[in-house]
Image 1 (tube, rainbow, N blue to C red):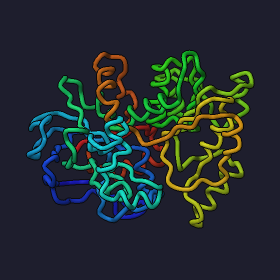
Image 2: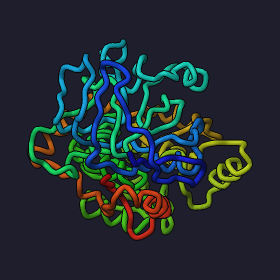
Image 3: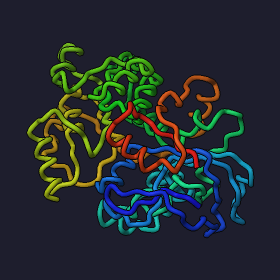
Length: 390
């Protein structure tokens, strides 16, 4: 089959690789009909995320049609149309039974490697690093899906792929970010970033009753989409000082809830801490560029909440924990418990409450994936979200 393969930093290619096969009786094989490029894929492209290996197949936002199932699979059959969550979960361990699927104790075969780095095991994930299991991803013609009775969400309606594809990641991720923010009716919610997850977090903030949403970015097309589709007020951080502007907009109190939908590779407006982050990363003395999470903590009102769906990799320097503690902030983070959200969010789509396809700016065949990775990374041609078809 054809698949997008990681060969090294800034080197991804569409190669011919072996077709996946049933390995465990709980597996299914999916023929991919649509897949997407995610912002966190860029952390793999540029080498920010460690433990990648040449030959790894990328992609964690897939959907398609079941072509084969293992002997133990009961809920799926050949011909079923499914969206596949990026998180792999067993459905039976301590965490899965609590709905905490991203903390699954069984699905990551490299769990001990993860535990050495972050303290405990975490779930496996498609198309990501070997820290999360080294599973082949969905930017390919076919995909092996472990624990197939737990993850895939069946699509029984005739909704087009583009309307449901983002149940695989960015819609549940944005929704969980808003849930984690603890939004109360009338709250002012500030969202850092206007990329795909941020756009879904903006939409979700309204669903939770926000009275006002403020979106922060520097890219004109993304800010425009946040304003039009997301009905958000906007701040361009190249033109305005974010903290001063937010204080002005909230009469000095600060936003009630702050969402960091940027993560480890934040661009900045030249602050000292951001320059230091970049310098340390360049000489391999640091990992994360954490300008946004610092700013969110400083901007959030006293006793507010900071929600961080943005991916972080390692240690953060100059973290303002004193501000977080003295302001009494709640900070909630985490990979998304996707399986918990796919059914209710699908019902919202089916009811016409939201059409996530508004985010798509580029559609292309899988063969064009390497070029589209660069376009997405460099924010060229107004690129916000790419959907690929094998």
